[in-house]
Amino acid sequence: MRKQIAAANWKMNLTYQQGEKLLGDILKADNKLADHQQVIFGVPFPYLMMAGGAVTEENNYDVAAQNCYEKKSGAYTGEVSAEMLQSINVKYCIIGHSERREYFGETNQVLAEKLNRCLENSIIPIFCCGEPLNIREAGTQNHFVAAQLKQSLFHLSAEQVQSVIIAYEPIWAIGTGKTATTAQAQEIHAFLRSVLASQYSEEVADEVSILYGGSVKPNNAKELFGCPDVDGGLVGGASIVAADFITIIQSLK
Ligand code: PGA
Image (cartoon, rainbow, N blue to C red; front, side, top):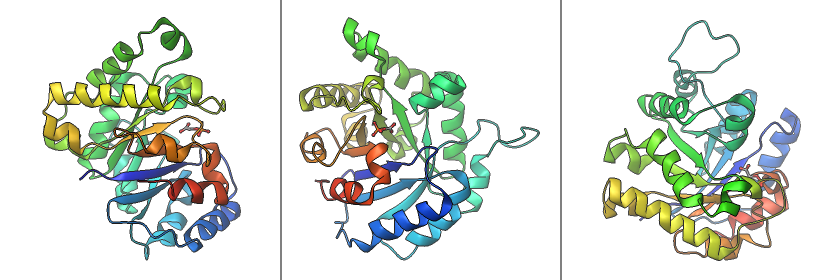
């Protein structure tokens, strides 16, 4: 049975002290997660060890980095490798967020390399895909996201792909307060799963958690997560407000 996941993406927000308090408040809420439910905090690099420490005693809570570099090691000042993340026990890493693609020029080819580095180091990638507004308006979003999967993911073995988490995040919905309707979300999530099924198999596609991201809020999470092919969410703005994220966690099916 695939996991239902509430993943927080703090982005470049919060001081260390604010982050520590936020984690404490969320963990205190005693969210009573079932075995198939998982909460992942995507925190800035300098907070990974603190956040990892905060969740060590907790079942079903874990920590993610928001990025890693595509090279193994070397003279890349300011970058962080997947091996470094593994060495501090980081189990997840967000890869290919649309902000990375847009502001840092990350291409599908670079992201394929980042996925390789994660998997070589036993880090589960949370691979983001999703179309910009003009593509949605032209009605070619399926073709667009299928190409993202094909170019970044399809060199992986069935076993590797099964371990990847996919986050579908339409760019027009990120930080805009505009959410995909449940019908739009279900349709494209089912499409993504069918793309995985035709490249690999139904069984493999069935195992992959596909999260929705883009203005997930306490008042829409339950409806979105209720869609059969939506396995939780990758949450930005609402993940840095304790009460909001707690409600979103409790909306997992
Ligand atoms: P948002 O961000 O929830 O603020 O729209 C989601 C994301 O960028 O992962």
